[in-house]
Length: 398
Image (cartoon, rainbow, N blue to C red; front, top):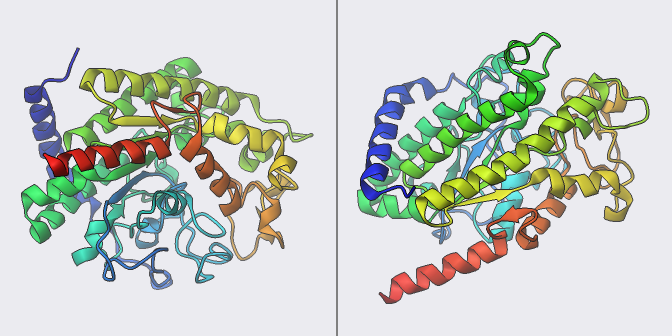
């Protein structure tokens, strides 16, 4: 069934009303006195050049570039050694030794990596580069991440997106602002926390008692669909959705499940194997209903698994032990100044118990640019940019 123009308008109107009622909840708590100075995003300053296309980012710690610096939360990466290999060698709130996933996507697509939405420097022409709404600790579900005190749940990120549109309209006018949003590349990455920090958090976690694993995957997917439709209703027209990586193979899960020989933990691994095909199916369904390829789905599981199983082929020494952490596999807790720290990040697939190193992310982004439809569909990122450039040229002629 096609989504008619009237239905799309109604969806947008309902979305705006709901988010407008909630947008006040996204007002951040004052930044702690120890919050780091906002580091400039990699790439040219928006004051030096007007970006050809905005980049908007939603999701969890894999894509948070510093929003959690401005929140009262335990899910933060604003202290050393995070950022040890960042261009300015300082922690920025990225859960990485250097650049993070959206930085590298922006670099590959020749876009500007946007500032966090809560960064007070995000104003004026810098809005034209887009915004990063992501918040470490969140999931698809609203009850994911409660243990981190304050995080920007997905509905709050969507509320901030609405506020971003208002700021953009004040700068450019409503029609031009909508054009910026419609032409933007949007990245959304979440879902992993719904398993590792919700369903599998404890043996008696409420969601685990409520659902079997297959039913929980289906429930998460039904909620994910609502978020994706909300993005569409707010005018987004090019949305890249990434699935979960091999959850059972991250150092945090190896340590949590007491893996003796580095074998991946069965339960979270099975969850990831279920989740990614369901996400592919959801994106196919949405594109069919809309009548065009708005959504692109990337299978993070398949893209990362080869690196984990054969690290030496990619120039790594280990895919089991995190560079920064403590305990078994350096898989316990967070990466802090008190953690064990490797001397050569180039040898490690994982930076900390949950997040890949910049090198591992670069390899993944390179795959996303050129991968077959077995890994990303209906097209890879190189094809996406070519298709969009051709469409822009046609609009310019007509």
